Image 1: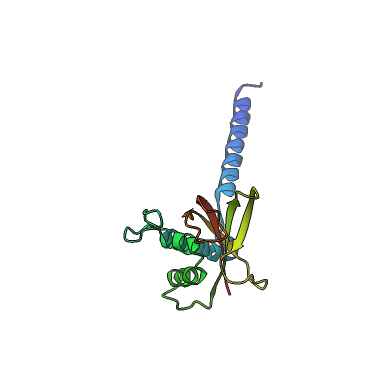
Image 2: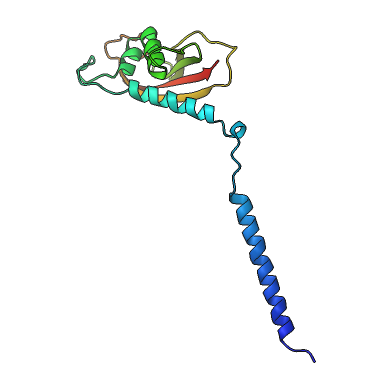
Length: 172
């Protein structure tokens, strides 16, 4: 004689197998294997270092007055006066231990700005000459407000504007 016990065990078995398969699927998809070769830890550290250096350089100290009387950060001053040497020295000092181990860190900076006369976004190198033999680089960027009403930077329009400073960093 056939009763309902066999059907109940079959339904219970199917439900248990679905629960087990779901659990295995979730465990396998949420587990990450940490291997140093796949995480690009050095690239992330280099990117964070570059962002931190640009942020520190863009702090407006109250004792420096810009052309219009508002405080001007060192980063704004370097771009406003087209002072690459000051930018390079300050960047290396902040990114390393006061210039120590500077041979290992290389960078190239570019400024992107809008030219009102030609209605085109233009770029100028703001760093060492372009090096085609570089290793894998990371890009850090920062928007910088420049007051170029006095025309100190001959490449930029004579107005208040925002430019994009992009720095490529690499070791080697």
